[in-house]
Length: 314
Ligand SMILES: NC(=O)c1ccc[n+]([C@@H]2O[C@H](COP(=O)([O-])OP(=O)(O)OC[C@H]3O[C@@H](n4cnc5c(N)ncnc54)[C@H](OP(=O)(O)O)[C@@H]3O)[C@@H](O)[C@H]2O)c1
Image (cartoon, rainbow, N blue to C red; front, side, top):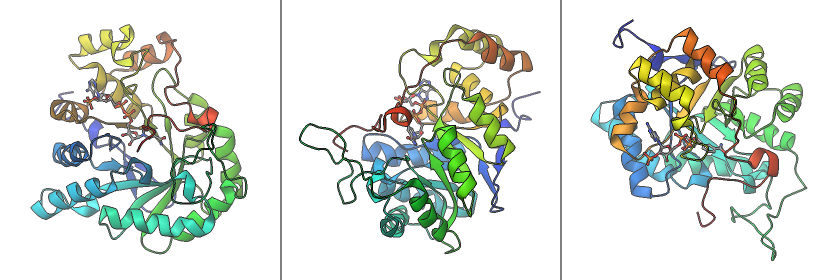
């Protein structure tokens, strides 16, 4: 199949709540510099990305909103063709804090509605304006006065307001996800977790598929961390043989296994490269599954409750 005829990059995953679908190939905005975030988001939309991921915690919503306004106003992209995701941070898990936090995010993004609102992690922090509350010993101060289900109920109340289309969970284990699914009035539409060939999470992928939940996979290229996925010999051999880059092989693998990979780049050529994805063969899919035995989790928040990746001073 020629690359022009290949539709893989336009794959969409249907959502279980009937609101539509999630574009599989997504662009994340966890970029330390505010101006770089705005430029990268605009370039990503211009390159063809139609799913944009941000979060209250990244402190990039204003820049992401500004980039989106630029492309909407230019007429290059329509609002209704972009799927915008943002997330509730840990200091806002108390039910009465959920809607104000959502509204603050929506306004910064300059949107009438948000496509998907996620609980960023299942760990509630001390309620208040401090995003990273720590005690004198430097330990995170958790909030034991609220459960994840309490927060989920407040998320459910947002759906139906017309301002929040779908809700979901991030950084959850399969066990936690099952508990919420069992108790929920509205099931999570999307689960957003780290996943790539070094952390394939097949159990979670299978559970999500069986329950109609879309799995969005962050750090799809390994977050520039070691061991390096982009230098993995199985991946580089497939890339050489197929005339693709290792990043394109990893993204094709993620889409073809039914997940929705998220990448981030502040580098214009990489933004284009990461959207220019086409299918890899069944042999390559199987080789990645069977011959890559390295296992690595780059963001340990699911296990420790202490968020990773975000610099402490943000
Ligand atoms: N829920 C959560 O807890 C959570 C956690 C982490 C991430 N996320 C979301 O997921 C998004 C993606 O995660 P991530 O940042 O870990 O993604 P990633 O794409 O695996 O890693 C980004 C890194 O890869 C580099 N890169 C990107 N494309 C490349 C390419 N084609 N070739 C070589 N290097 C490349 C980037 O470098 P340059 O920028 O220098 O080009 C950057 O250093 C985040 O932005 C965020 O929206 C969510």
